[in-house]
Image (cartoon, rainbow, N blue to C red):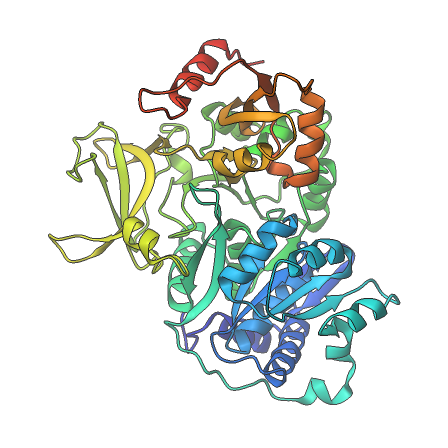
Length: 532
């Protein structure tokens, strides 16, 4: 499949020449052909080049799932830049951190996010050029005046711009294409460096085992800031398929209707989506027979969900998968194994090798639990601006002089080589398909007046996978309520970080060395938890 393509955007150009009039992207009522996406991204690349974007400069994108996000991704790549797709729900403090950490000096965003952007820019001591997207007929005059800004529409309004050749490529296949920011164990987002060559290798591998062809129509409800969501577009543009792009999975009846109307063949999801689907009334009214396959990643697929999926979609292949932003995908389970090994995430990809080791780094016996290590062409080079964390997670093995990714996840392997996810080594909470750092939630909650101490853990939840629970010790002279905490959380946190449960306690349990004993909190919750 590689042909002469060495960079991500090469695939768009090749597919546009081959299938120019085919629908590449469907967003709401608007349909974009491959030729249109290719031409628009060429124009954006030219403008970025004229604005002084140098090779390997980072450009941030703060947008909902949209055609503009896709055009931005490819336009930045064609301009030899590095795209940084930020979660559209980011609060100002985290946006400011990502802008500063990445060194991005250009931000493409929507006028609807002006308040968050303005608050973020107040925390940055250097100039950032803004490219504002606004609703039709509503040019952001004040925003253009107040910032070093450019209107998105102006990039494409100049007739001569459509004839301008794209800037020549100034990057190679081993240069970075993207930084994908993911939560860290300390609560500070970490930027995973993703070179063109590695992104292409892993995308081609996934395309191969999913048996994708240009007849496939993929419905994506996952954020393009989330690697799992981003790769749906990258892969489809490689094999010439069509992507139906939705902003979220909140309105599931709308999503199911979309699958029916567009005759969708592929549906990537996280367990939260499936749990919500199973609670819908009238799901049987939808014709989902077009679905050739569904995939699961982001968190382990509960065994009972796999069984229910089989009954709901008897004609559909189910692919449970496991991966990390640091290597995109590690393993997948063949559909014909789902019934016999429903709790497995399958075997490693052909492009990687895995080991399971104990705390001393020694391989464990079959069936024993240990940390999963990965090496291969899917393993990314490390974290942006963080050599210490890179050296801790991406370690060179003395025996084979190879770089191994230490996943931080506990696994076991059976005698046939199938992998089984056990749990996270650290405290990370997986909820709604997102990884949430307890430390980040704790750091936010402790700023609420009346909160003296706080500890956050994940508890089992049939819908979310895990729900966030906050244990709070309040000041004695403050009558703090659960409603106060939730209102504050809604103002200060992304939606997926808001605690579902709040419990006020007199004191947090602690270990002998004075640390909060979260193991004790979890044990107590396990005793109290009763599935609904």
